[in-house]
Each structure stands twice: as structure tokens, then as C-alpha cells.
Amino acid sequence: MELLERFAAGDVEAFESLFRQYQGEVYRWIMRIVRNRAAAEDLTIETFWRMYRAHARFDVAKGNCTGWLRRIATNAALDHLRRARPEVSLAEDPPAVTKPDLVDQSELRQSILGAMNRLSPRLRIAVILALVEEEPYDSIAEALGISVNAVKVRVFRGVRVLRKELSAAGVHP
Amino acid sequence: MSDREMEEMKKLLKDTLPPVGDAELGHDLWPAMAQRLADRPLRVPWWDWVLLVGAAATILFFPGVIPALLYQL
Image 1 (tube, rainbow over the protein chains, first blue to last red):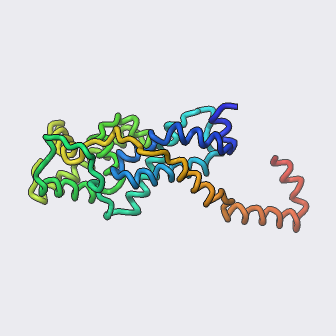
Image 2 (cartoon, chains in turn yellow, blue):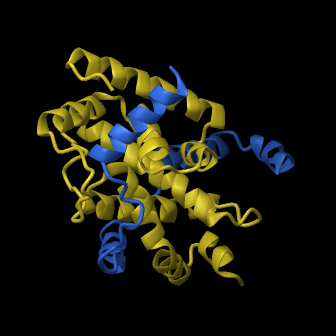
């Protein structure tokens, strides 16, 4: 029996194989959204826990494990952002390597981070994935379970809200 | 909003929040996952128990429904 079939039948060893195969990919996807290593690790485990609980609903015929996991991971990250909002900050876990062209005025940086943190989680995810991580719109749409047009609308609305917030703070992008 | 304005916002965001797309997982998470599986075994939801008890009670008090249920199977 194939790995996915064994997983769908509730085989824990098959689940472990899938976990080891996909944990890095799931972690990276969640990291792009929450931008915090500790939270991303917790949410990776939460994602696989949800996957394990739903093993009987996995469609073996489709066999799209990556897409299914990404959707679960996105929902887990969205739940995290909703639960923790507004305490969750996008700047909690900045990358170790900094580029010379990074925005160095801390006031401007704080204004942008503040505006991002005040965005609703669903707009924030769309803006981060589309504009910061430059994920293809169809990947974002699949992960969010919405159409490509709906993703574009969310990005547009998110940017509009950001521009308003920044203008109110005296920043004119 | 024009494409230029969108690009400006994109640049501003990327300068403030550098992409983390290639972040690597530092260690294997399976031990933590295995611990979670051991701590929280799968439970049957309470609603399923209610349905089961309801079905059993129906069959007990109204045995006449058995043929109808079998017909539905």
C-alpha cells in the first residue's frame, strides 16, 4: 500500500514519514506568514496534528499532500494571528542578515510595522505573501482557499489601508 | 491606485520586512510531534457519542425502524 493510502488509513508510521518529508516545507510556509521561529515551530506541529486528526478525510485519489498541508498550515497561522492580535508583531524575529538598503530610519520602520500589525489578519497574510514574499497569486489562492481575483482584491485593499495609515502618520509612500 | 504606487509600497514593505522565504528549520520536530500524539490521543467527539446513544435508544424503543434503517444502507 502506498504511503498516502496508509496515512489515510490511520497508520502512524506513514504519518511519521510524511511528517519528516514535509516538516521543512510547512515550517518555511508558516515562517513567511508569522515571521517568528518559535511560533512557526509550534504552528508546524499544530498543522500536522490537524492533518493527523483529519486523516480519514484525505483524498488519496487526488494525492495532493502539499496543497492540503499548505491549506491547513495557512489556517493554523491565521488562527494564531487572530488569537494573538494585536500583540503579535511582525518584527519579533528579524532575520540575522541585514541588507545595506534596508530602511534605516527607525521611526519610518515603526510606522510601517505598526500599520502592518493593525491590518486584519486576512489582509495581512495576502499582503505579506504577495508583496513581501512574492509568492505567485495562484499559490496564495490555493492556500487561502479563495480565487486568484479574491487574493488580488485583498492585496489591493491591504495596500490601500496601509497607505491611509501611513499618510495619517505623516509617511507618504 | 497605480502600478507605480503599488511598486513603491512593495519596495517599502520589503525594505522593512525582508523576505524569510528560505528560512531553514533548525532541528527535527518529530520528537515534539510524537509527544503531542502521546499526550493527546484521538478522541471521539461528544456529538458522535450523542448520536450513537440516540440511535441505540431509537432502535431499543422503536424496533420497527430497523428494517427502514437497513433499507437505507
